[in-house]
Length: 593
Image 1 (cartoon, rainbow, N blue to C red):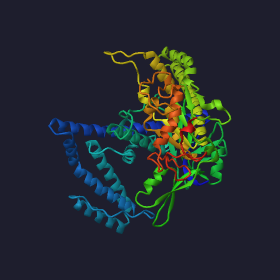
Image 2 (cartoon, helix red, strand yellow):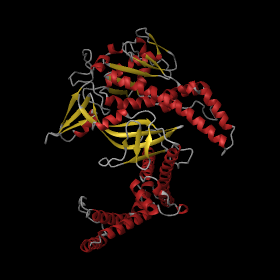
Image 3 (cartoon, rainbow, N blue to C red):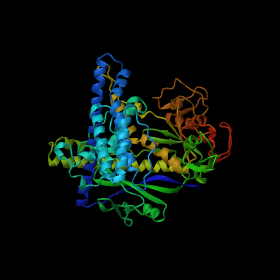
Image 4 (cartoon, helix red, strand yellow):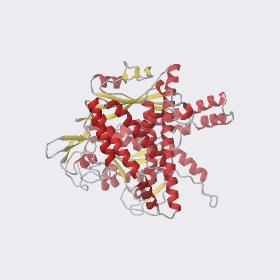
């Protein structure tokens, strides 16, 4: 079985003492403060840019002309920043072990400044004052960037925010500083800056349409309402984050904290040299603290794709065919390594009907149990609805800021956390069984946002069956179907199977699973499906499940699609419509049962 490196996260529940809980909360508070600091800098820059744009739009300019005018206004300052930044990088390159800076052509109008800084560098090297000149260059670059940010000419990145924070961190708290920064690990701040940058990027991509779904304008995080979390990193060559035995984890600044369960699987991989710890992310969920240890693990993958360079013969393995094809666009070829396991070949392809009450499978999840074609959701939210209602009513009767309210809030958070843990445990078990037991896992591309939309209507037009629709939405969200698809996306890659997501999932609702004839008059709201062609009568979910695999067969091609799926799982050249023997990975109508 081929072997490659993958990033895997190992999640453990911590068992800290009271003093360690206080430290964990302080670290999470520092990360939250850094997030708010970075978001404030970005918001200030964006508001300045919006004010400039409003002035130009009020003057009669178009949107494109206003943006071009703002860019022209900040061109001179931007060019100065480029020259000074090159000056800073050149001085840093004088340090032993640093790479030389690429040749730099100064922007028009900045030649005199570039020559003056080059002369200053030559003089500093001759007199041994490189460190002093480097400190001055850093201060100047940060000051120029701060001027550009406040004027709205550019938005600070995570690295820019980190540089601005180093200038302000020793100021009093009333002036926006954080004089207590030395009491926690510095990575608490950098992880907060990174998270603010990701939130801002997601909003911009959602606004421009490059990101699916809707991401609102980033909001500030408040203590007691935002999730408590932070990330810590280390140098893998000189590791600080490590497991102390099987029951304790050492983290920078926090020391050794006891693990509630055991870290034996990860500890053995590290001891054998098969895993290298990269970072840790500590999160509070309800009444517990959890740590997610990210490690680079050498793992056996049943199915890999190898890109072979035609010039030098370099072989680079990839987890998916899509990634290998992108590497081979310019030069080279792609070769398949390995194939599905014997268990997967025995199971063949399977279609999964995503329902609010059951997962309907075309083949049994457990080969020895024919009744396992129906997998019932545990419905943890529904089972605990009475407790949730009682706890929420008790919380509503408390006064804000009181100790009773704090206790009721903790009790409610603990109950919600137990529901989430139970749901996640079920989904992880089902997704792993599907990924390890079948060659292909075919599911529908459901739009859960549209399916769970409220039926309340508008003040002018009231909705129908509002209570029934709300109950259906609650059951559908309780099933966690979106999380199931996310887990299948990466687990099928890990275990050598392939996930097939139907692009035209809506057609399976109207297509007969026995004869393949469409019946457009069959309403999706009906429980039963009747086919006027063959006379077949099936339950709605059973018919949809029976039609998913044939629909997936038509979507697959002999070469992989942009999602990495391929028909020939073992590299055999067979047309999509031809029939193959058992375990060959082809999808046929007989496979649906």
